[in-house]
Length: 107
Image (cartoon, rainbow, N blue to C red):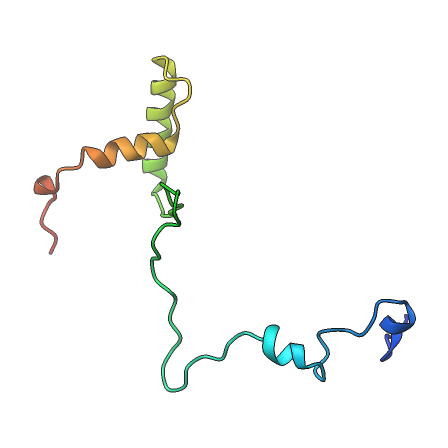
């Protein structure tokens, strides 16, 4: 088992380790910004799309029965000749047809 000593990188021709604590670059460029004092750090929230982008990746959960239904719809669409259809396209089509007036009242 070999232990690494100070200066080993320099001996190998690799130069000084830029991440050593004594290096001023560490404190300015390689450290994460500190959280504001007195309150919890928050995420950025939803940001606008970059110019030229028309879609964003969204992740959400389905129940197993919903996944089976989605897969059945996908298979049926392919059987009907829509060979390039995807789960995403089926979900987008369904979203366009949602009628919130038919949403049941929740207690």
